[in-house]
Amino acid sequence: MTGTTVKTPGRPGGRGRDAGNAALELVILAPVILFLLGLVVAAGRTSVAQGSVAAAARDAARQASISLTPGAAQTAALTSARAALNQDGLDCDPVVRVNVTGFGVPVGEPATVQATVSCQVSLSSLLVPGLPGSRTLRATFTSPLDPYRGR
Picture 1: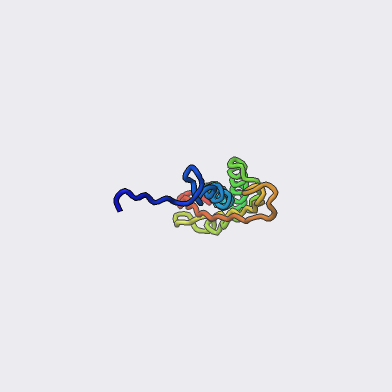
Picture 2: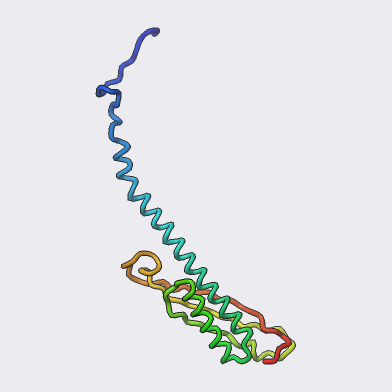
């Protein structure tokens, strides 16, 4: 076996039957990779929008907890949620529900206020322009009332 060489059939230059496979693999895999990249971007944008709604719920509950009356708590929560969502660039008309039963608790006892913010966001503004449909994002936050402040 010493001194023998094995020749492989193929074209001159040694390319053989594998010529052009890299380009074909790229053509097949490129759409799959782009689709997966699009899914990652969509998941990231949805997560950021959900975080904005959670921050708006936190702000709404905090503003409601420092209000003196249930009516003022509802107004402050709505104003705060709208401002937070506008600041984050989320285009929606939020629905803010505030549970103000804590205002009925006697002074000196612990009480809380709970704010729930719902926001219906169009998929065209969230993911891809021109995409039909919408998604409802919702978050709830609870904030304590000062037990020694008059209600």
